[in-house]
Every structure is written in structure tokens, then in C-alpha cells.
Amino acid sequence: MSILVPLYVYPWPGAWDPLISAAKRHPNVDFTVILNPCSGPCVGSLPDQYYLDAIPKLRSYNNIRSLGYVATNYTTKPLDDVLKEIDTYASWPKTSNNTKLKVDGIFFDETPSTYDTFKYNYLSRAGQAVKNGNRFRDKFVVHNPGLITPALLTSPTFSQQSYVNLSDITVIFEETFDKWLNPSTFDALQAHRIRRSKLAVILHSLPDLSKRVLDFVVEQVQDAADWVFLTDIRVKDEYYHSFSGIFEDLVKSVDGGAEK
Image (cartoon, rainbow, N blue to C red):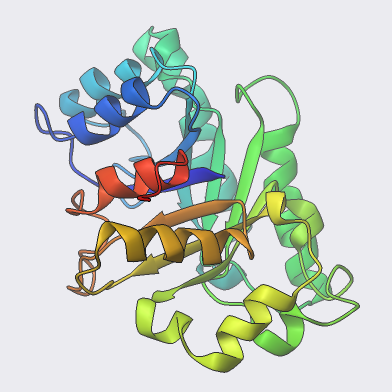
């Protein structure tokens, strides 16, 4: 199991230390982190100096993969704008004259969940811009529709009715902890037949949980997906702008550090 980190934390000195420390202490845990300096890549310019100083530090750890954030607005954003943002991330090393600013792929946020030919072609072209050539180290693509309905998730024709074949990871559930516990949602997440290695679950607004209960939550998420992120931050639009108090315990749980 691995951790997908929405790293929307502004990189003031020391702000990314929880991630760096976790990567050091848990070399067997893989972290895929999403960089989002300007609700995207700061089109027309590099990110500011704090980002330019912080991003290369991630390159020191073999268990950290970095992705650039690009929103598609459920494919209503003009595709040319999406391709321009992808190009901007790809240009970071050359523009900055620093190869350590090379990112490993793209995290496409606000992607659709139900199949449509136009949307499929749109996402296919966006993904090809990441996969083709050597502009991105891992050519890694993540889609985040935020929610895939239980009916679609458990459908025997899910692969034909979705975009899962266009991405390396699809976030099948990004919601509150309470909604995850809803029986229809929970049962569907446990019952689907999709390869877990291609799926992620993100839960926010967790209550105050003991480490033992947190271990149990991680185990239950693992039945649905191989990628996870949990946070107890409950303030809307602030879920991913700081490291929550449970981040260290989350990493320990993923690394097999369950309490006996």
C-alpha cells in the first residue's frame, strides 16, 4: 500500500518536513505527492522561490514521486489550456536550469466519471501529452473524479464505462469519513473487481481516532485501493493545505506498524 499526498501545503521553510521525515523513516513506503503552486503550474512563469527551493529536495528520496496538478473542470476547460499547463510543468527544468525540478507526471483533478466519447478523447489526448516522449520522469497519470457511484464501481462493464484505462491511478472516492461509512458506499468499495493497484481513496474530516482504529481504517481502505490519504482536517477548502496530526500515524499504519 502507498500514500497519495495532495501537497497543497505552501513550502515555507520546514513546512514540508513531515513528508521528508516520513520518507526518511519509512523507506519502504512510496509517496506520490501532488504539487500545486498556483492552482496549476503558474502558467507563464516558474513558481516562486520557496517552491524552487523545496521541490528539488523531494528528488533526494527514491520513495517520493512528484506530480503536477492540472484541473480539467470535468473536461469543460479548453483542452489547449490543459495542454499548455502540462507543457509548463514539462518546461520547469529547462526554464530554471535545474534538472531536479523535473516532475514525474500529472494529476488531473476534476475528471469525469461516467463515459462519454468526447470526454474520453479529451482525457486520452491529455494523457498522451504526459506519456509521449521523455518530458516526465515516470510518465505517470492520475485521474480524480472525486466520486464514482457504487452502481458504476461494481458494474461488470466498469472498464468500458469509465476512463480507468487512461490512467495509472484513479481516485474512486474523495469524501468525508462519514460518507465513506455509508453502507452503500462502503459495500461497493469492498465489492468491486477492479485492480486495487490502479485505485486510490482519499478521506478527510476524520474524527479523533486512536491509533488502533486508524490501523483498522487503513486495512479497510486497502480492501478497496492500494493508494490512500487520510486527514482529520475538517475545514472546507483547507483539507490539504497543512499536514494533519494523524499524518505520521497514517504512514506508520501503511508501513505495517499496527498496534498489537
